[in-house]
Amino acid sequence: MKDVSLESAHLAVAAAVAKSEEMGVKMNIAIVDAGANLKAFARMDGAWLGSIDISIRKARTARMFDMNTGEIGKLSQPGGALFNIEHSNGGLITFPGGIPLRDGSDTVIGAIGVSGSTVEDDHAVAQAGAKAIA
Image (cartoon, rainbow, N blue to C red; front, side, top):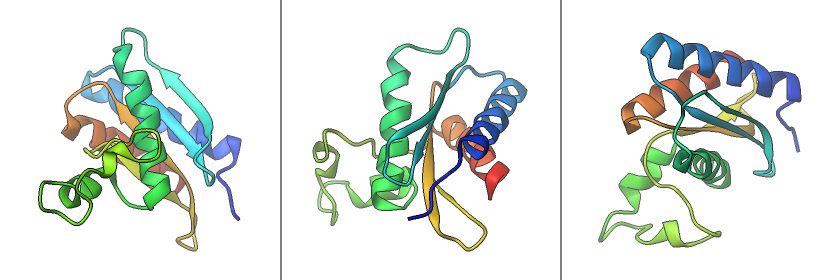
């Protein structure tokens, strides 16, 4: 199994922090490895304490299902194929801000999760982090 390196995880965090600063938001940023274990984490000064756990769970959710958490959210609405999935695996997050990390051959090597603002902002910051190592 390929895995995100510590160096790449730090690059993703740095890119996400830079995007957060550009947007004027304070974020919690989590990187998990291919096994969904925490690899790197940053809490920007003043970022919400409640978003620490959310960012980690977004990253774990994105890695466990190898898709953006916002996409899982669409499938988990009442009547959807994944309704109530957020109650599995010790608790998942099914709204935007979690993105799988892929290497040059499109293999999933981990995931990034971001929380601290609107879900649109969270997703934009996560995209910046993922793009830094794509």
